[in-house]
Every structure is written in C-alpha cells, then in structure tokens.
Length: 80
Image (cartoon, rainbow, N blue to C red; front, side, top):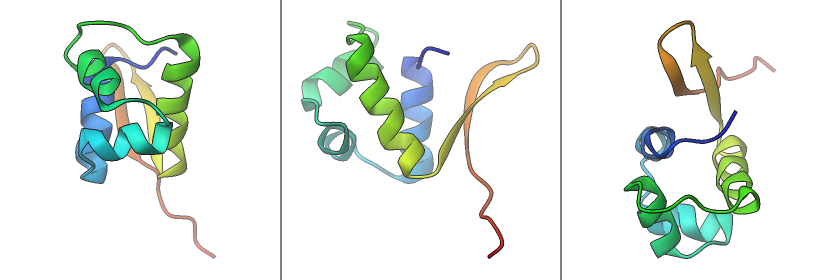
C-alpha cells in the first residue's frame, strides 16, 4: 500500500502532530511533508517509508476499507 497525502494529513490529525514534528521524526524537511500533503510532489519510496514508519511507531494503523478507500486509525491498546 502506498501512503496517500490524505492518509498523512489524517494520521497527523489523530496524533495532533504539526508538519514540523512529522518532518523531524521521519528525518525529512518540512517542505517535503508540506508539498506531499498538498499533492505538489511525491517523495521517493524511501522517504514515504520513513513517514509511514514514524506514524506506525506512534500507533497509527493504515487500513483499506472495503470499497471505502484507504484510511488510518489508532491501534487498539494491548491489554498487558
């Protein structure tokens, strides 16, 4: 699955992260994040993977809903 700009915006919203924080955690520039989320450019596969990894480490799960398109949600906490 390829990360979409809408998923990135939604995941940041779930986490209450500004673009600057996502950029820092994925080791990318803020302009790369901003341009990607506005649909101005598509980062390299490695950069998209870094963004997705940052989200996943924070507890975001990327989903594909039946007929509803790609989405995001926070993982359910595990009972310990």
